[in-house]
Image (cartoon, rainbow, N blue to C red):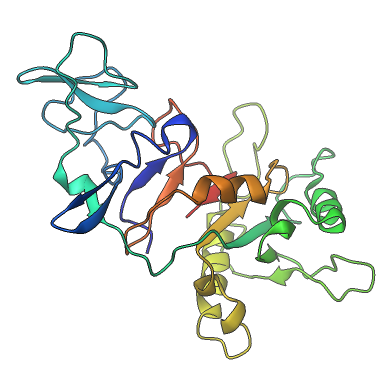
Length: 262
């Protein structure tokens, strides 16, 4: 699983979020506390009791004895002890070292609405032609609710997933993009099942996510450069349980579906 903890992307990836040390000859890595509803304090909030912050790139800094607040950086004049606790220093596992990428995206044909500005398939086809986006990864997949060719001769196709609950609920229409579309949670549930099943598949096992160091889910309209991500990931030390990267700073739990790195 990927429930060991959170790591922050951005400027602090190699400093605050992933400080490394050695205790009793064990190599350790710094993770964020796992998300627990209502547990962690908001940005600039007092974290003396919880010792954790829910805003990405904010840490619990001690101001005085018994007083600590969530700040991005420790203000001058504070004690500046970072209080997240020993449980956020975990042993590094070297069984998945490296920067190899298993990447996937999805194209949903039946979204429940007819948007003239949906260019998801066109974007994927163009990215494939120039070998960018997910197609620059070591392994890639495109999942869809339909089977469709991705190249001229049809040798490359989407992997179709299906479910009788794909069209059960719609997003609320509150203005802006996405209103009235089918909620895609059921579809992605089937996508994850497909990915997990590859590990023990006699044909796909050697090319499954299990053979790569990192997994990336990228939406078709995301500007994703695999080589730049690999440069970032080269310095990340992971625990045996795995880790996910929070890439959007200064928001609560900045792990968003447009680009998921695990």
